[in-house]
Length: 241
Ligand SMILES: NC(=O)c1ccc[n+]([C@@H]2O[C@H](COP(=O)([O-])OP(=O)(O)OC[C@H]3O[C@@H](n4cnc5c(N)ncnc54)[C@H](O)[C@@H]3O)[C@@H](O)[C@H]2O)c1
Image 1 (cartoon, helix red, strand yellow):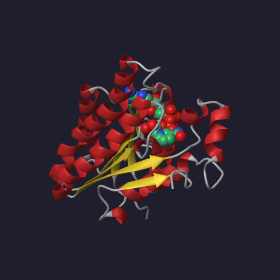
Image 2 (cartoon, helix red, strand yellow):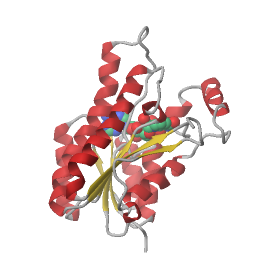
Image 3 (cartoon, rainbow, N blue to C red):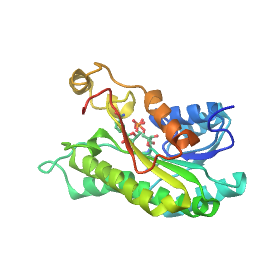
Image 4 (tube, rainbow, N blue to C red):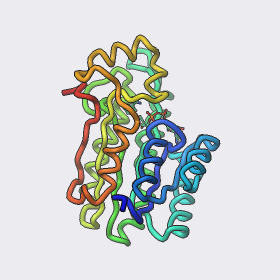
């Protein structure tokens, strides 16, 4: 018996990095996963390897969200969980950023998360259960130089609490996870010098693995977390302690 037995879960950005790790963990725990991404080759490969279905989904598109949710409901009859994992990072502060960059990041990280919650909420409300996990960041817990990324991740944290309040009476739990330095392309793209500097500030003196975030996501998706809603869990080896 897996702790996600019988559950249907949609994971965004499931083609690589943390999303792909979460697809594998959820499958291992008994869930049927709808793997989604804009990277069709990678997403299809993860779905095929784990025996799941793949749907192309750009999280900024309300139409694509509607298609993904409708096909999941008609195929599986219900949606028990959503992991709003897809995200993008780009450098840019007040002096060297631009409004175009700001909008691009907010569109994916913040509006994509809002659209995901809005898309699954009606079926979760009608079945009177559901768990939504929004992937924020430690950049959503404190000031961060890349201002658009930080703003979008603070917004994910705030929207999580708003959604927990709105949807709680329908037995829908909504929580956020705040990863630190996690070993995916998003971290490696910062370059060795930046990664080393970041990791040297981690009390545990190492970066985290996608599975170490993924197991926390699995807990929140499962009935073991049945009274946890509106919470924020930091997974960062003590970095912002
Ligand atoms: N890696 C880290 O150190 C770290 C730290 C804190 C938070 N995060 C957050 O974790 C989440 C997962 O990132 P990751 O570390 O796996 O990085 P990653 O770059 O490996 O994966 C990001 C995924 O999001 C997908 N994606 C990007 N734009 C999309 C869109 N418009 N629609 C659908 N999918 C889209 C990508 O295709 C990719 O599969 C992100 O929300 C990220 O902001 C990462």
